[in-house]
Structures are given as structure tokens and as C-alpha cells.
Length: 509
Image 1: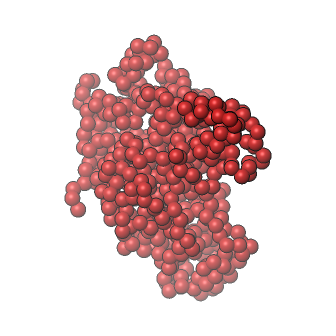
Image 2: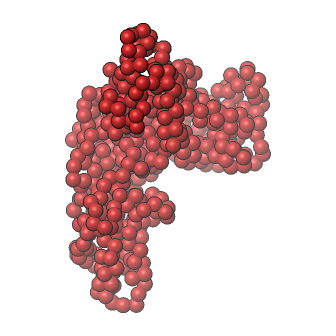
Image 3: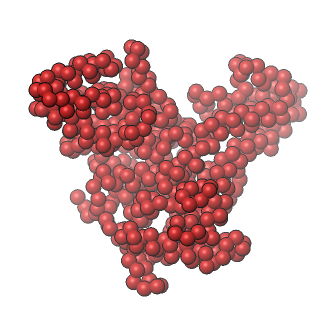
């Protein structure tokens, strides 16, 4: 019996990937939501079992986000040729005009924190400069400061200045971070990772967190706790690989704020692989996920078209998965029995409800389901699922691949896999403890992430006459040159190169 998933009219995507992966919640937003969940479970981080109901109570931090993202007056007031006292008075009047009256009515506590208005303005400027998407046109309550510590974490909010109670918004915090928390909790080394993350990211005494706390004042939690979303798998190989990648990154000799950027990219890559792997499984495809990558160079390469084809093939996977998932009900013994029953239409509808939560038993589906045959119900649901899928879940591959730097349209008319420097750095930091032979590095890229770059990893493509070995060898050489330029590769001879991690592995603290 499939579990019932709340707040969905029909469940197809949800049973393949969970509730829910969402295209507009890009990797950095996913990690921010994940950290919010972790912050509510500091006593037992990442130890939830598949049967456990995990709850969390996010923070809202309305004063902090108002000061950073709904406070255009601070700079103009700072530049005024008036006394410091007058600056505070003028700023207070302006800020009060747009305040939410939800804990941000009285900001006089700031005078006790900052001796001068200029110091206050510089603190705002510093934190704004580190914020995610600070220059985007998103509403101020959907912008986020860099997670310098527990006081800098807050959920996505919809805040109306007409006095309405603010509500959490599921557009940018769509529960993908909740799924990330469940994935890592179900990884074999999840508990180990949880302890390290708490130790390194939830230290309230860190200087930047103290600055955030000085601006925010007392924490402003959401009024109620909530349960996490639904993850259909008790175990999955990708959960363990993601967990191991994060443990490797956190073991490197680098500041935690630098490591966090690599954690975000790593999360995006592994979640993208999870999305495609689940799609292949639902489609009954056994071949592993592949990304045929072009390493961009000044000259047009023979691999460009093939990389574009690889991109388009993966883009179509999720659509195929939902079609197979809906149609597969007709291959079951239960469906055959329903068709042979005295009331086949009713029995088919009953089975559809058990599998997909549709059509509803009380007929609350705009009259759908009543009197329709089983085949008509399957066709109708497939159309509904496809439309909803195209709106968001179907865009995950394109949105996330671009966000992490795996795909690009640079020097091309269509998207293809062309990893950028940021992604390459994260992969080196993750896979290479100190030094790794280049050929082995290419092999691990293929085995762990499905990235096909060199001639050995692309041997199947040569056998299938899709590309010649020379093109793959040239692509491999282009990657060598890129890594040399990034200071990540030591080339001793034409046949001996080593990928080097400049951060190495940190010693015991």
C-alpha cells in the first residue's frame, strides 16, 4: 500500500522522487533549507530512521532580513552631513514606514550595539555583499544572507505589509532541503556527518554570526513546528555517495565558509544524479546515467554535438519516467482482476486511488472519474501528470545543471554539458585527498558521477562510431590544460600527470 501524500491531488512524481524536488529551489536554496532543518535537530543531527517523523521549527528573523533587504535608506542617511544622533533619528523614521510591525517596530536596541551610525551602515554593507542573489528582483522576504551561523538562517516568507500574518512560502523553500536532510539521515555515515556539520556550522561564537546576532537581536522562530516531506527510499546508493562527498569536503584544510560553497555544488550535482537515476529506474532502464562533456576550448570540438545529444537525452528521462509509471498499473495482476470484476470501472478507479490518490473517492475532482473506464482514467491521469510535470519537475535537469556549472550554451546554439571552473574545483576538492594520477581521476569521474571526458571512459562511443578516439583524446588534453590553468594539475611528462588538491586533508583538530 502506497503512503498518502498530503497536499497533492495526485501522486506520481512524488513516488518516483519524493515530495518534493523543485526546479526553482536551486542548490544554494536547498542547502539553506537543509541547514534550517538541521538547526532544529542539533541534539540528534542526521540520525532519523525511515520510520521516524522528523520535525523542525524554522526561524523567521524578520528584523535581520528587513535591515538587510528592506532598508534602502541606510546608505543615503549615512552620506548626509548631519550629526550622528540625527542620522539615527532620520533612519528610524524611514525604516518604520516599511516595517512589518512584527517585531521590527522598535529598533532602538541597535544604538546599544553600534557606537556610530557609520559602523551600523558598514555592517549592513558587509552582510549584504555576502548575500545570495542580493541584486535579484525577488521580494525582500525571499532573499537570504550567507549562512555564517545559526542566527543567519531563516525560511522563505511571504510578508504582506497590510497587517496579515506572514506565511512560509513553498516557492523557493519547496521542501527539497527537507529531502536532502532525509537523504543524509538515511546514509550509512549520516550520523558522523551530522556531528561534524553541527560542530563547524552552528558555533554561535563565530565572529560573523555574532555580527548577525547583533543586528537581529533575539531569535524569531516560526510559531509552529512542521514535519518533513516524503522520501520514498529507505536506502539509495546516491545517499551514501552524497554523504561521503560532504565528509571529504569537510576534511579538507580550508575555512568552513569556503567549504560551504563546495558543499552546495556537491549537493546540486548529487541531487541531479539522484533525479536522473530515479527516472531511469522508473523507466526500467539499467544503463547508468552519463554526461558526455565537452571541455570548451578556442576551437570547435567534435564532441560538441555529442554532448548536446547527451543533454537532450537526459532532459527527456523524467518525462518518460512518469509515463511509464502511470501506464505500468495496467500490467499488474490487480488491474487484470479489476477488469474481470462485476464492476470494472469502479474497481479500476479504486485501484487508481490506491496507487495515485486519484480520482478522489468523494468525487472532488471536477467530476472526473465517474463512469469512466480504466483505460480512460489512465489516459486522463497521464495528461494531467505530464502538464504538472512540465511546469516544474520536468525543468529540474536544465535548471540545476546550469546552476552548478555542468551545462552551458557558450559558443553553441544549444545547451550541452561543458563543466565550468567552479564545478571542476569542487570535484577536485572532493575526490582528491592530496594527489591523484590524471587517468585515475578521469576513471573516478565516470564511475562516481557519470562524467565522460577521455578516450578510455568514452570507449563505448568509439565502438558505436559516434565519435573517434582522437576527439576524445583532444578533449582529455583540453581538461589537462584547464586544470593546469587552475593550479590543480602537475604535468611531469606527456604520459604522467597528477591532479592536485591545493587544500589537502586537514589534520585532527
